Image 1 (cartoon, rainbow, N blue to C red):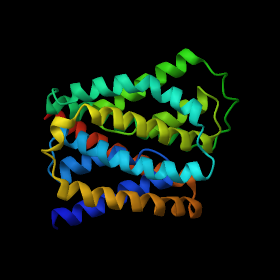
Image 2 (cartoon, rainbow, N blue to C red; image 1 turned 135 degrees about the vertical axis):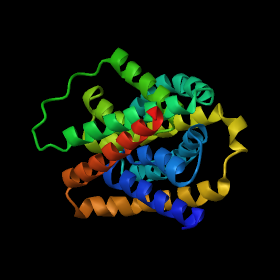
Image 3 (cartoon, one colour; image 1 turned 45 degrees about the horizontal axis):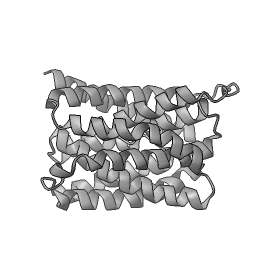
Length: 250
């Protein structure tokens, strides 16, 4: 199978997951770029940031039209992550490949566990009151994660906005896209020197089908059980995390 076809298929899967689940699909982009398309871990994180930025901005536009974005609160949350995202983005290119791979495997495993837990039908309690210091800490941590590993962090941003800032789910998903977009752009600003070495013939079709897949994912979510989709995705993500962890240490 040609590289372009693989990029098209991988992009469609990533976009479908993002659209259906509101987060987590970008965690598949890095392993797809490394193991299917031959990118190094450092190049894969940069390419993933480009894909995440384009897909998130597209989805942000759709959610903004639906009134699901809280601009002021989202901007404050994102502001705390801008500097960590830029610093982590500069550091990522200097880390050994095995360490980036192992760190990514750990984050993918965490994402899978969070998705499995949130897919349970247990009733949730009342969200806690907003704590500005904790919100800033969450924003900074999310920014560092985005910059270092090239993931949007929707699987962490949405729960943080719900539990820390007491957002309802629809507003959390929409606002998280603002946070993800800002962090991704901040991280990309520090990686300008690496842009010229990327294979744009692969990244362009990957990004295009990811954007289109996100719209299909929204329609899929309307027809299928949300918890069932989350469980299926989480199991696949656990398998990816295990494979990458083994690859990093062998």
